[in-house]
Length: 488
Image (tube, rainbow, N blue to C red; front, top):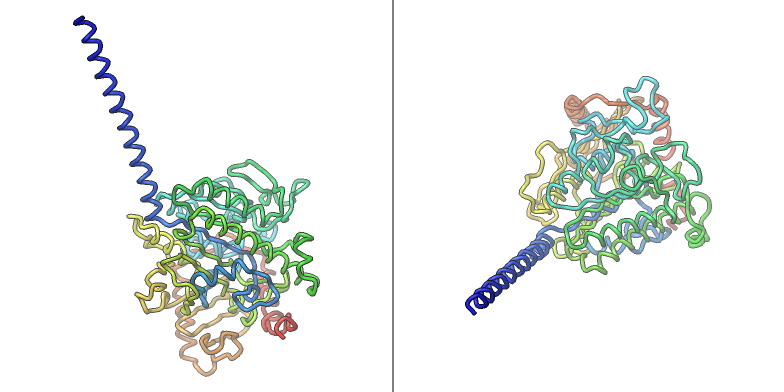
């Protein structure tokens, strides 16, 4: 009888211990759930929608009645439109290197575009070796450190070698291509440039089964669904509307009045807008929109000669330092934090995205001090009434530009420097250099002083491409000459 009582007592104690452990696990689980919810409340998700070679004028929110961009127009109406948003370079690779590091890419030698097969015979690097140095921290690195799950989808173009791979540079998930341009459809045979094969994470090569712009939206939606319970950063690097000029028959039929490349770029832009809309709709469906920062911008001005893009009313195109080469569409939405239907009219830069995103995370880690971008939140909020940048610089070999207040100086290798007051003359039609020689001299010296802080280029394009860029600038400088019927 005594023995039975002892057994009952021990069983009761064991039961209490089991219940205690179970409750403890449940409590820990509840705490973990609370931590996830707390993290979600404190840290916004971030989605960067990034177009390629799009024209400044080719969006409804910039006044186009030709292009059909309802989703991006709605994004513009839901937040702030930056009227003077700049990139750090008017070409693909260097512009991306600036965004990803928050630094002028010339600081680490990424001055020239990295295009295999186009490089000088004496270039110090070519092919897969042209990339952001591994000692440079990326936007993905910073957001991973802040507790974010990070994904990159689409065009990489900042290094093809394995050590430059997105999975090695701060991105947990990747579906895209390491190179700079590829077909929008599945390759049926090995492409001429291996860096342009579609890849899922590391070396799992998997061609898209759908039109690539749509496929990238699908991949991003998958990533959002998989990470809806934790903070995430999705960098959606569309190759639209970069060449080749590929569009679906269904999208082409939406523009019966257009012809040639203009018709194709309109169809490609429609697909770009549809993809952006699909991603934004998923945020809405999952109840994530209120706590998600969404940014839309572009890597450089449109190359009118290549894809029939329009940068009107700005002058110039991709690859030159006129406004049409370096000023891009730039939208940002964060409900409750950014006023809807607002504009911000001082110059900002894509270099600012890294520190702005880091600041939004509330991370204890400080914003890096060795970058050139600035945290935009105090300016967007109106707390800081000053201009975010006293100066903005651009440079490629002998060509360079400086924006200082309302003034902009452009330095050329084949003609005298030009000076414009952008506030009064955004089309850069009235050169003021002769009227303000002292200002020209001072700004010229400022460019040289800045150049003296930079590294030499790690690689060089063939010399002839400098001539190609100058000729393109001269031919397509006055954008009012093109697509005139669309503005009647």
